[in-house]
Amino acid sequence: MIRLISWNLNKLALWQELATSGADVGLLQEVPEPTGDLKSKVLPGGTDAWSTAGWEKRPWRTAILPLSDRITLEPIISGDIHGEDPSVLPISRSGTSTAAKVSVDGAPRFTAVSVYAPWERYFGKESPMWADGSAHRVLSDLAPLLWNQRREPVVVSGDWNILYGYGENGAAYNKARYDTVFARAEALELTFLGPQHPAGRQAEPWPDELPKDSKCVPTYHHSRQNPATATRQLDFVFASKFIADRVSARALNDPEEWGPSDHCRIVIDVEL
Picture (spheres, rainbow, N blue to C red):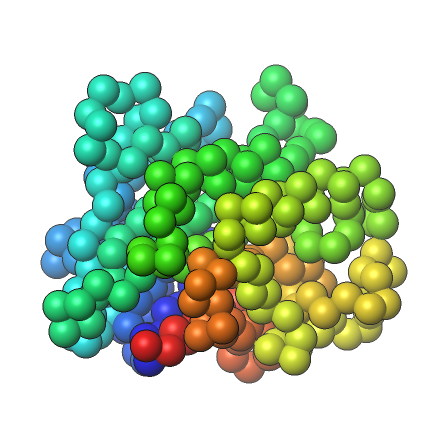
């Protein structure tokens, strides 16, 4: 078994927490630029700038970090979508995806991808905000990795900044937009793996906006909440349908295990 931990670090240098997590690989989002010896260990996906592109200042990005000696990582070099090098993975917005091939004892097992779908705004205004456009860009960018998933399966996890099965405050329009992201992932032969209850604690008290039959588990709390009062799930895991029955995801979202970020950790186990 290989254990991955998917975590939005909220710009915090949580390297010690990751080192003691017991995982083999870290799939990270909102990662601050590493310093010292970590610079050579954290995979930045081939970009020189440690940032997420866009007009808003975002001095952080996605990254992948090896956490045990059991595995080796081969980075998949990414580049700007306008680049001319056919050997790199073109990314619509640099910093939103980092990919690496995971091997055990020299044998490739799967490709791991850490993703982040940034919030976007209308012409620089504070509101409204949406992230489903970014999520679709992420899926488009992954297409070159998905052409032969039976032989080269993929595990994708990260902070998608959208909701599963409903819209904010029950808005049907938002739900319909979010549903297109999950439907497109399925069309790309990526199976949705949650995490969903019972693989995580559900919100208590039950949010008015959340359908009564939902199995969503909160993975994020905003500044007026804490881990015990978190209500929304923004972090999701997908895997190639050919290995999905060997991949499981669980949210470490109990208050005592949540950790220092505004996102909880997601543990992903891949049976070999």
